Length: 514
Image (tube, one colour):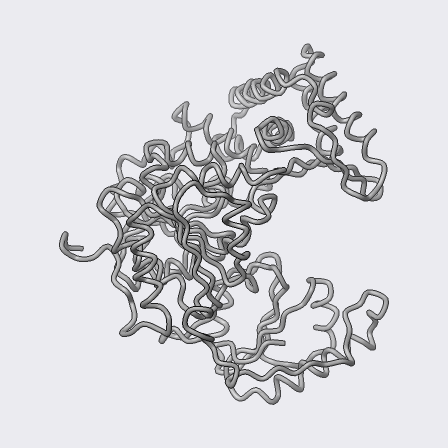
């Protein structure tokens, strides 16, 4: 890319209704260091509009951090960046990218400690070879793969023989745009580890699905079962038999949690009662490192075998550490025979504080909280502009193009769920699909269980059913392969929440929603 070319070029021949106004207003707010809140429906083209606005507003040296709720939402952003000729990098789960740990059932905290120890001792061959690969080589792979982001780690490993995650992280210094999942901004320990040299004050932040700010526990929270914690106690006995202080302490925490959890209702228990001795939490973290170091010495099978060595104590110690953080509290719940400890934010400070530190921010969603939430609850200390596109320019998708049919016969009420009711749903789905001439029929269910029950009786074909392993790329390929098809998803899931299925002209493939 030549030096005189824009960082991002709006990738379509003309703006959609309302986009030009958003680009102009957002550019001005970002240039002034403010916060721009954008409420616009799915299909408006929020991503391309805000990328254009930010690219125009940059004065030089800033990083644009575009954060998404789940890794499946990376793909639409990358698609616009590629079309706009931008240089970018992506960051999501290091464990999923790691050539040594992709198929290993290991928790994130455990993985990160193993990864850190291998890197610090020069024992990871993929990390050690990173200096042999240039940023241009990594960027070439990224641009060639495009919006099929889930292929990037495999392609980097196969073609360049280096660690995909740190190859992509190293690109941060060379590109303007970084697309990442929420933890890379909101979790301080994650941000500092990856963006250590990038001050938040030089970051222009874009938050997709920013309505989640109203529920910070959906962004930063942790959950532990006492069964998991008891396994950690046994690990202490096994690996550190002389450390009775730590073993007794963790057993005491478990008993305290269980004693307060007497019902299914989630109950607040002040963290002072649960943790009691904060200094011992740091001692637990140190103990985890000591145990892992001993595992390196013992492990004769190489780095991949070491990474697969699981330690429940890793997660337990880190969750207790989070509980000690300002703005977090502990809660307990009993579900059947199992008892859970939750660490949840009790204020907006865990999301408000990092937001206050950035150069400027754009928050956008199709279901944004009202302006009062931002003015009186989030309480930013800088200028904030709230723009509801449809209030400003009228309906983006006029009602005359929309038909709504309300069915009274089917019900998802639990007491009415039966094979008879599932057949009723299936009949309506099949009839609606039969009437569809072309495009995608999106069927949205309250749960996987409900979807799979109806699936047994539906004959709509071709159909794609979402599951826990579904990727957005799979759905895109399916939707583009068939001129007419049904895509079955779960409400609030990775496909239904803020993800578009578009044709090459940027128009929605979805013609009917059930």
